[in-house]
Image (tube, rainbow, N blue to C red; front, side):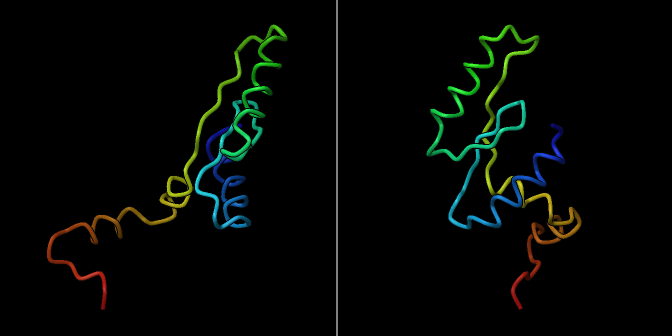
Length: 88
């Protein structure tokens, strides 16, 4: 699962659960909420014991990280400059 696939899936999950601020994702593409961290660890440990070529890793993806890429770079640079008014 590449980053764009992870981002697309994470966006859908975040859109459906507005209070959720982060997700745990295993390198085989399974998503877990932080509340279910032990399930993510059990999943990774169980599959890592199956003599995999690459051990499963668990990464955390934050809501802000997923949606931050939606803001065009030019807009963020313009808003960051001193003296620019972002609120009208």
